[in-house]
Image (cartoon, rainbow, N blue to C red):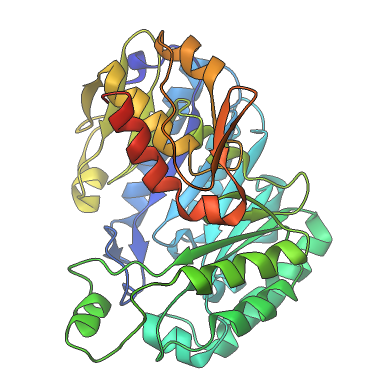
Amino acid sequence: MLEAFENIPSLYVHIPFCKRKCRYCAFYSVPCADFMEPYVDRLVSEIRRASRLFRKPFPTAYIGGGNPGCLSPSAFMRICEAICENGRPQELTAEMNPESMKDLPGSAFDYISRLSLGIQSLSEQGLSLLGRNSSLEETQGGLETALKLREKYGFSLNLDLICCRGCDGGSSAEDLEKAMGYESDHISLYELTLEGHSPLSRDFEKGIHKRDEDSSDELLGLWRALEKRGYEHYEVSSFALEGRRCLHNLRYWNLESYLGLGSAAASTAQGRSSYRIESPCDAAGYAEGEAFSGYIATPLTKAEEAEEYAIMRLRTSDGLDLGAYRDRFGKEPVFPKVGHMSIENGVFRPEGDEGMLLGDFAALEFCLANSL
């Protein structure tokens, strides 16, 4: 697996454990189990083997889930220490649920430079609809703990919010106003996605909950509220104060190599030959297996790379650069005519928030125009 990487990649470490799956969630996760320690043993082994091969710090690293806060403090620290064996990444992000903040050791912030807190809502209505594990009191408590730790250690703080939840999910505008009051330097604002097999999706299908078919006006209002407070809208769901963009995600959106470790993790190895590498959704099997066993590599064609690159770039305010595309894929792109998208100085990009709403459509039109 590691031989597929020609240059040192960013690192993603997947912790698929949760106390209980939220009602909207369709991602792979499992309840906290007695095989979490062996799971971490294998993760640490794989991280250290990669570190010994690359012999340089990972450019960026991200510990995601699930909820990494389900791990014991010692297990969490072992992962951080393994990631930093060759030196600190430029950015090391850890996801955490608010109710887990009380269990996170302060010494973790000797390694963590960015904390992403999954609050999702700041109302009892919203938390109840989403089926979150934390009450409003626990969510606010986790936020207060994060702010105290930030004051002491100086890390960057991202808050995750889910909006457009329908009439039974409380006011997204009120949630956002409260969240901005905590003065985090980054906010990730996701529109509620109803996956076909999630309990919440089934409730909407049955008419138990309702929401508008078109959420564009609500989204535009929320986006503009963030921008008025100084947040740059640099990707469809991502808002940052000046200089606080998420470096790890920027590498995803530029289709740079990243190594994903753990059950249900994915990797992309870019080079003369490029691969998508995936691990099965089997946390127990991963914990029992040998290091780097079970990962499946699939070659990527240049057309597949070009399509993914266009989709990623057109979700960002930086857009798709003609020169970068030509250098990478060896051909001149055809730029389609799409409303609220502009072509200036060889860059195809969204025009403001209205353009951001059309990013996925613009990517589809670009792929069709270029026969991808």
